[in-house]
Image (cartoon, rainbow over all chains, first blue to last red; front, side):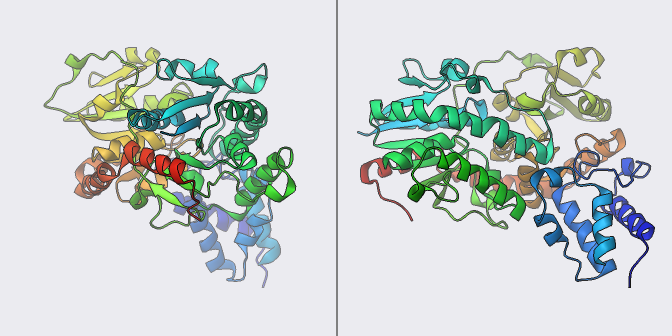
Length: 92
Length: 389
């Protein structure tokens, strides 16, 4: 079963908001270009929570750890919401 | 008595613990020399210190620590600072070792040139770990990237059979200025012969003037600091803190921040560019900081809980150690709002668990052997030269 791409992006964004769960994130604009590090100041433990939530929702076989380990350090630094949503779209 | 050569990068947070260890070694009659970037830190060394300058004519000696944030700051710290400095320091450092003929080398963990010279010349050496972030295993991508950097550095200097995956880890002793309770309980560390000695407090910091009469001893004191490197980064965080702390009942705060902010500070907040941090901590109830390794250990040694707002380098890792130990709360440096800051401060002060956990950690930190323990480990390696592993 493949979920439509827009639904996956929306699910990632919604999960980011509930995971960070602070006042500023409520109306902080999040789109495909938003970067986890520079734009959201996401803690690595929060990224793990988001990844776990995505796995629970889109399939246990979703290998987000594998997706990350195949990337260079600069790609990790620049990792965006759209990168994660795109990976889930092609894998789920 | 042993001949001991110490090498550290020109960064005050790395130099201070080394100075404390050196003082203990000198007290036992050992003969010390320093291989350092003397232009930058020569004045901070003990009077009459035997110095082998690493500056040279090379621009690498004056490399500035880059000012990025998060993981990018880690990448730049290694690629633009540590490794260029290591490449430039290899030859002068090797010459210093040949001239001084030490029995043992004491090498800061962010000074890999020292580790490579010791390996090449077959000398025993110990590593000084000034931040426990550098001994934790991270993600496969980052671990592989670090190993690749080290492979390249070694290939230009060491014969092929001497190249190892992590040359920065001493097979003799890794002296860690923290305690296992904070750094190593729940985390995977790189396999190495660790000796956790706790903080090695430098007693000889520069005297800093402070208006002690400003403090009202009927109020609880909060120290706010982002450390020396990030103090002048941007003022948003400080402005949020001033607004959150202004009028906070029963609370006064000293904030280490640009002097320009002083004019806008509320009555109960004192802005100073420099403070006598250790003396102020003796009066403090809580600390709001960047989770620098030294500030965290200094606060916890006194049993003071913290709010941690990490920005760069090892700070996110150290912040997580504080939170996981139950001795502090997180605040997002670039995003925190006034209501969130106020609520976080209230929680830290009102829930007794944070102070209780900080107190437990304080007991363990004060019980650790400190600089004296580090010095005796170094002396015994100088005497025996035996590998721990």
